[in-house]
Image 1 (cartoon, rainbow, N blue to C red):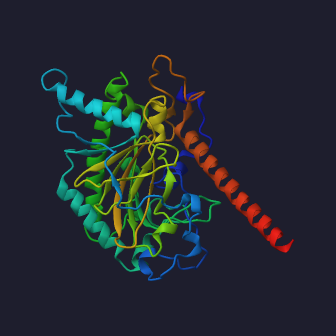
Image 2: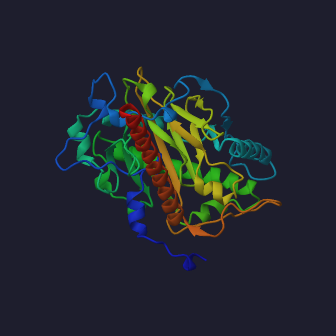
Image 3: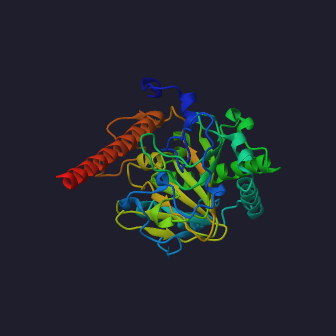
Length: 391
């Protein structure tokens, strides 16, 4: 089937230019030649620049620390148990994960097997990097389509509003495609820590996909195999203190395009989720040593819509800086996107099989079109108001 579907643009370019998380549906901000980019970490301005001010309907509705306990916290102790003796623990984990995916598409996991010292080292080194002088960070500027590195904010092409954050992106899988020259060489030891962290998160992601595969009545490796040659992108998000956090976002509302995302967040808080189209939001309670697991669009489609793709955003605050590390587990660009299991009475969520590259292209096009439409409406509204004043 894969041979019958043609990817409409270069797959290697897709691998190299897809943006994080957090954000993979966002385009990179291009700077004018010779212009010094604005770094939120290097400013003491008391008001937001206009490029960061969101429209009123996009601004935060819930405070960063007004936490909810709606998102379940699931212990993975026993996830490696086989069926039979001890298998009941795995079955219990499966039931909890399925319930969370059918409800929110988000859950948190503890007892996941990722060494706490490794996570602590990753966060320590990340904070040291973002504390470096601007010229040191900008040595790894990833604007212009470079494969990994540092960038200030990001936004959709055609959309003027930026996110209040700085990020570092590591294209970590496939291993053979890594470009270590794009991995920051400061602070010392960060590259090695990222390498170890990447491998641990890949293992954990495959375990979780195995549980979801079984829940769909498939073999344990079904979802992983559907990814063909699984990509992994690590995105380190740093959200500085913000002078007017009620006017902006750290990361605008979105769903992740890929299969599954594993997010480590510090204890400050800022991740928010909605399951009613953005009418109401909850602030996800940070849990010590936990990973937040978000199901992406690819996982949503493979389950024929049974499992929700997590609708989320990140807010900022004026009191504390915040750090998060997202491991985006994505299918290869040529992987086929189509439901693997259809339950009785369900309608297909896709009309035909498409490649992940095509799925991603359509998502980007839709987001860009919505951004242009919103901009046009704003301009029309401004003209109307001006005409009324002049009438």
